[in-house]
Length: 335
Image (cartoon, rainbow, N blue to C red; front, side):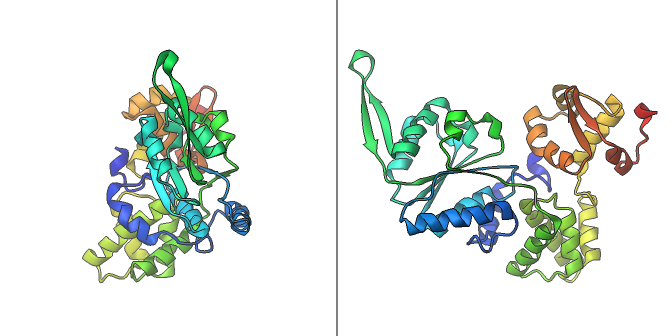
């Protein structure tokens, strides 16, 4: 279900090219996340003056907030190449060794979903991050010996949506740890306006503001909504995007003024109608809405919590007064 949602913060395969086009190239062009930009810019400048790679960086936060974009910016600002992989793709030590041995001095290795690398790979990363070397065991049993293979000095950038799943030894080896927050609506509006200009979409200020309020405070969602509204405007109107056109397009997609779609509403309505507003355990809720627990916890919940329609309690999930009001439900359980 997640993969087909218009408002899912996960990247879709067909969006890769357009995301690269819209991605800011420098830290100055990067909009929002001011609490990261200033210290990061100082660290980059200091590393460049010392002619050293910047210390390893760990980025964590919800999908679609700009972790990959920041990694590409860091590589560009440092003058190195960016090599990208993902935790699940590193199945054997040889996979990691092949990548590290091909890095040049100052290159950046970006590992998405770093919390999903296996323990063996993680242990190899320890020496690579600290000593810029890979320890490889050759042979078996009493005849086994360890060979140390040096690698060029590089910067590892890890990205994760689940910081709690990273082991302490790995987490402690990152010199910089940054949390990406949900964006402020005005920052999302700036992103929508900027990207509309890049894509040559005629859009007025009110339309950009409307799209930004329904983008779930997430740039990736904002970009996707902008493209859907553009398509609607080209087919049903003259191509120009006004607030009325944007509203009609988003209404057609069943995205309401909070940015909720039918899946979000189903989760909230299930808690209200089947469990009297909660609390209900995550396992039970997942079964009731036919979703994986991990999907609910990492994709759906963060935004519902952020806007105050859902609460996590020791006994389970509960809907709030705002959720009842938005869905026009009566709070029978509270009477």
